[in-house]
Length: 525
Ligand SMILES: Cc1cc2nc3c(=O)[nH]c(=O)nc-3n(C[C@H](O)[C@H](O)[C@H](O)COP(=O)(O)OP(=O)(O)OC[C@H]3O[C@@H](n4cnc5c(N)ncnc54)[C@H](O)[C@@H]3O)c2cc1C
Image (tube, rainbow, N blue to C red; front, top):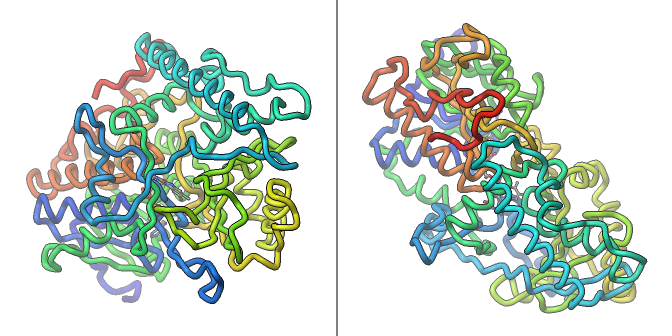
């Protein structure tokens, strides 16, 4: 369609085909029999940050396998006491997804010149675990009293954890504490305790690992993790399902209290009564022209929320060798003597329940280290990994010539993601999260009346893992936020015909409610 033709109009445009967009689309079809939507996705496939690929050399002893480049674990399964399940676990079971329990206590520790004492490292793990229990308790107390937030580092120190008390160059050195802390904290939040919220890390941990369970199951399914969202969607009869357009990149979004105009990079314009934007926080943070051009520009309260939350990067780096030279434990911990977070966690896929015989191992880096390696050549990153593995297992067994495949996804550089998942920085008020989700046009009480609209007349909604108070970062956040958005839009389109406020109170009514010094951090919802 050229720019002069009449734009195609839809009641609803769903922007982005990741977990959030698919969850919204599926609920609209199944619960409301509503199919008058078009889902637009820039890549050639659905799933977003759930993305799998084939890896390994088919002619090598390990062979070729499907690995997950994005989300890999169902985090939190079913609470045996309450019967409450993670909805992502329910989706996984519904499609019979193959998963295996990740046992983080099943590891052997190393440094740059071979093994470390497992007893010593386990005792440091126990100290961290005790401190984290105290951390959770103090965060809860702080929240109940309505005291302001501080960094996660504060909570860890108060809990009795000191990351740098070790002495000397032997295995009792501070670097072991740093590796243990990185393994437990950064590997989950993809940022350091200095960069993370004390209170919201505690909430996030409780909503998943206490409400559901503390188990993480690794997905090893040849169909890929994305099946949990794509299969239910494509199983819907075509007449009940909306339309999907792949390879359709949104470049601009114009919004008003009567609707939304979306411009694609091809120049085509689509119009809609409502649009649901599910692009990652990293995409929203990117300035145009590489990011989305909003008209009118995002109001200050929305821009503040977008700028304030953090998008980090978590990078899994996969290697396949001609033979397996690492132990049978699920994990290995590497404590680098000089650099915190340098290739700390190694995970074997060549183990029962995973991809036995595959000769595949992967390691993970986060945050600035992810950005750093994304700017390096593959060969330079591989050389770093081989030097670390050489220190752990001996140079004679770790040879470049024995590497049969090597890959990592550059999530930070990718303009469609700009990182892997969001995190809550210290001291950021929960009302800001409501503002991240709040529709446009809209205004926030106390934040400049008239800055772009009337409360409750929003047409452009925002949802994604980053808008979830309970589960930011996790797939369950994306899933539940997609469902919430679907319910709000269905109310407007099917029942209240676009009346002001039809998105419902949970969607807009609390914008910045609770803002102000001394007010409680506990949400009233
Ligand atoms: C490496 C990695 C590891 C992770 N590990 C886990 C884990 O183990 N467990 C867990 O629960 N979660 C994990 N996560 C987080 C989880 O993947 C996300 O929370 C979730 O997939 C986000 O879904 P979403 O729909 O909100 O966003 P996305 O999946 O990002 O969906 C948004 C979609 O919008 C598309 N898009 C972006 N810009 C445009 C544009 N301009 N035009 C059109 N389309 C566009 C994108 O291509 C994408 O498909 C991980 C993520 C990564 C990347």
